[in-house]
Length: 133
Image (cartoon, rainbow, N blue to C red; front, side, top):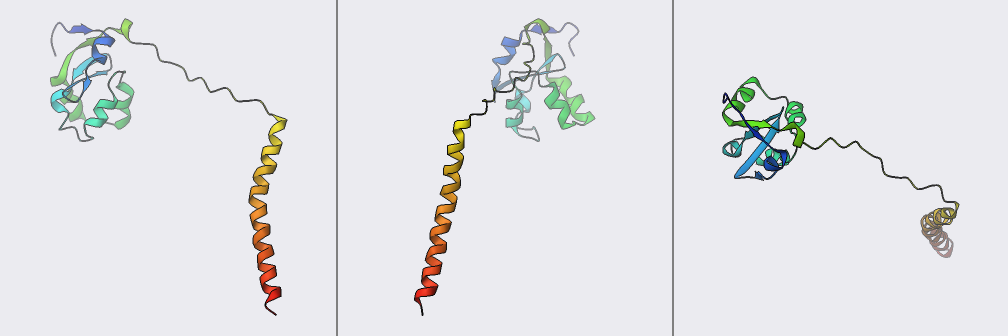
C-alpha cells in the first residue's frame, strides 16, 4: 500500500463502473479491479454489480479466502472520502390501501369465473350420461 494514499470522492469512484474501468469501495478503501475482471471466479458481472456503492457487505457475505484478501493489496489505489459517501437509505414499506368494501363485488366475480365453467362442465356431463340411454 502507498504510504500517502490518495483520497477519492464517491462521485469519482462511481464513474468507474465499466468492465475495462472498474473501481470498488471496500472498508473505506478504493480498489481498481479492472485488471482482475476476467480472472474473478464469480465473473465480471459480480464486480460490476458492486460498483457505485460501498461493496464491503457484498464482499464479506461471500466469505473470501485469506489469499483473496492479500491479493487486494495490488489493486489498492487510495481511500474514500467518507463525507462524500451517501447515507444508507432506510427501507420504507409501501403504503397499503385501506380495506374497500366495494371490492367484495370483485371477489364475487372471481368466484363466479371459477364456478360457472365447473357448473357448465358438470351439466354437460349429466346430459351426456342421461341421453345415452
